[in-house]
Amino acid sequence: MKQLHEDEHMIFETRNGDSGSEARTGTLKLPHGEVETPVFMPVGTNATVKAMHHETIVRMGYRLILGNTYHLFLRPGQEVIDHYGGLHEFSNWQGNILTDSGGFQVFSLAPFRKIKEEGVRFRSHIDGSYHLLTPEKVVEIQESFRSDIAMCLDVCTPPDIPYKKALEALELTTRWAQRSKTRRQQGRGDWQGSLFGIIQGNFYPELRKRSSEEILSLDLPGVAIGGLSVGETFAQFEDLLAYTAQLLPEEKPRYLMGIGTPDFILSAVEHGVDMFDCVFATRTARTGTVFTPDGMLALKKARHRLDTEPIMEGCGCRACQQYSRGYLRHLFKTNEILGSMLATEHNLQFLYDFILDIRRSIDGGRFMQFKQNFLSRFFANNGKA
Image (cartoon, rainbow, N blue to C red; front, side, top):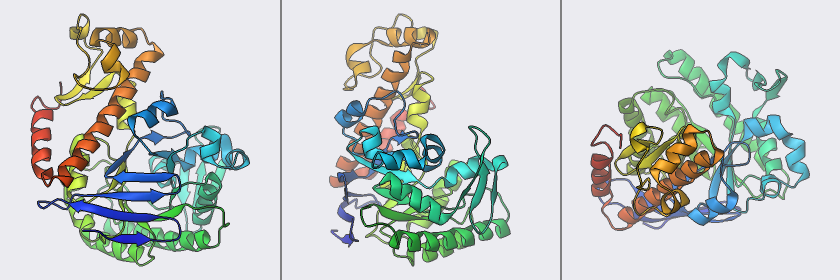
């Protein structure tokens, strides 16, 4: 099962496939080094993964993180990042960076934006200033960031909207992707990043099929599945994911945007998805909630006051190697920053090891058994450790 897709900047190679599902392992060859897939990308909204040193992220094994085009465009601004020579130099991150298009932020800040053919006019959540993001401008911004993977501007929609509205969003997403590709081809020669298109279509299968056909016809080096994990039920998510994923070619990397819990990740991998990201791991860590094989553990609970055990036996993070649940509870109860730092490190270490186990199970031809065993244990107590 070895296939190649290459443009002048990127190669994606699949390595092994699972006999009982569409799960697969592979390698992304990006400007700042190779990345094994499936891969989870920690979210670094403001050119930093919150509460984490870059060195810690690298030590865990991560080689690809996500930056937020919308937030970085507003602050510190395109001019500042371009002055430093891009996000890598500005933030001193030597691995790869995927930057999103800002489409989801436009979706989530609905009261502050207006979508037109030209692009999205929105009001900054920081200072109220008005800005216009066009498909061309979004590519230009990511070009100045020197992103290793850049995303086309798209129109993300909530579940349960009328068919007509979903169709309009799909058609605009396609036209914007066409304009994005043209702008990428006209860009400056020193940017080696690859542009990915995004499939939309809401929760209408026929629109998902149409969007897949239109985005794939542009022959971009990678493709993302957008418009999922936006408030729908898990059953809706699985149905539309399975339907959309089977429409995609094997030779291109597949990116499912905005998922980061074990059940969603395992479902995505089962259907052949290679890449995913989410803020869940870092956001919940800052509230004192951490991953364990037996579900999510709330460190602030009184039952941990005298608990001398680590969060999780066998975990290599500093929280588990050096500190007890009782001490971590104390840090959160006293609002000490170290609590968020240690919990974040644990959650990201957990997900890295989890994805590594997934890769091994695929390479060993036992992914579906791994999935069943993991979820049975994780949800034995309704997902609470």
